[in-house]
Length: 423
Image (tube, rainbow, N blue to C red; front, side, top):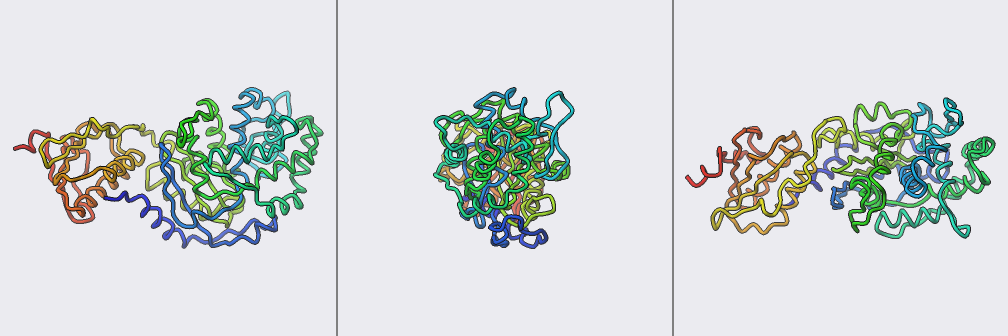
């Protein structure tokens, strides 16, 4: 059988193509010339498997999405307290390019690292040796996270640099207040170059895998960030990542996120899943219109809202939980919570297993909770096993799975315990 996730993502894009509105980022000439019809989505699991659909190999510039990763990089390099001395964590309630400073403490500083004043300050703090270009340091770091060599879009870089009047004014204001300690022209130019690194949605979900996985890069097993660094970054993404639309985003989608004016959005649900979307047309806050629509549908469909309060079970089924009770019967004993992340791992396990058995039994007696998406995915898996020629039965003494029939109009046999199957 095949997992239904790729089909779901393709259907999601098809359904979202009707979402209109928004406009390209016309204040940057090169971005104003972007193809408004590009649309892509990608998803990464806790262990780094990537699913994607649409224009998933199309490259666009990372723009402000870079702020989250550079913030994490600098915290890891200098320590959280050193960064908090320079940049706060309070939502600004203002546009991303406002000259927004927190003046409630003894030290005036940018309100948070997700607006330009904070991001320029954080960029200036990147440790360098031998006059190494900060943007090149970040390009190399992003390449490591993405698992491939990334490049600058020099046309976008030059276009942004030539029109960076607002950012230069922010830079001079920061230098005047001694927040920047070096030439604002050099810092702003390097920051703009950081934003011009080219990525696809598949690159982005590979990069955010390190945030999903608590600071460990799934592809290599290397620890990149501490747990505290990840928590700090995800907290600021939650409150500030969508600028002055952060409140609406948190209520409707409920996933720590960061957007960019080229049309990308990333979302991270720690311990479960990472998401990335791309659609160039923006709303008045600078966030992708269709990207928001896609993210909201995924959050609703998969039960991903941060405040759902459903714990994650990392191992829904282990190898020792799969037993053969008869020569042609295999039992999968499921454990803990069955929501999207766990259901995806289960279906992937079923896809990988060599099912020569005629009958497959799912033992649900050790499941403590199953949400709607977990129900749908399990029933879809049953359909796919049936289509492959298998009989399917359930051990469900607590009746946690509704007795609704599957899409193939098949209702599995249900037993109170496994011993009943032999009878």
